[in-house]
Length: 195
Image 1 (spheres, helix red, strand yellow):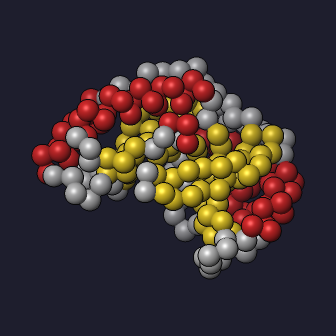
Image 2 (cartoon, rainbow, N blue to C red; image 1 turned 45 degrees about the horizontal axis):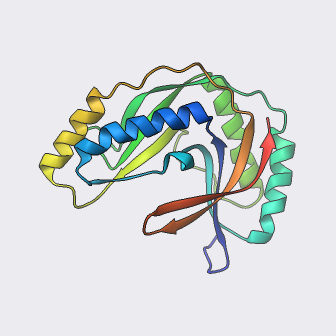
């Protein structure tokens, strides 16, 4: 779908439990001292597990997307998930995105994501070409970071231990609106479907 001035920037995701948000806030605080301002951190309350990025969306489509979500994922099995360490995209030596990993019932999570993907394709979005790699984006490395700062950041990521929490089963899938601002993205819940 083409982006126009009157469209919303949307995505479909799993909201996180308060315990995960609190833990990820601690992780961000620990890493921030090593980053020397070279990373734009995600607000912990905005961290989520994206199932499908939609992008430009006609606002009138939001109710239909929610209706279709109810049909495709309402009452679907919820995977048991755990946090599983930190990683980076595209690779460890040249991080652009810093993320927390997710482990657990990956088969059920993949099924949930495929249901959302099929729904989006049926509504006119392009199918995702990249494989689904569940992760929680916690920061984006700035272009202006020096080589020394990057090296310190990579060492901090490597040495940061993410404490284990009890596994969590998501209870909803949400449609979010994303507004990009100079201080980072602001996410608004447009509606959710219980799973």
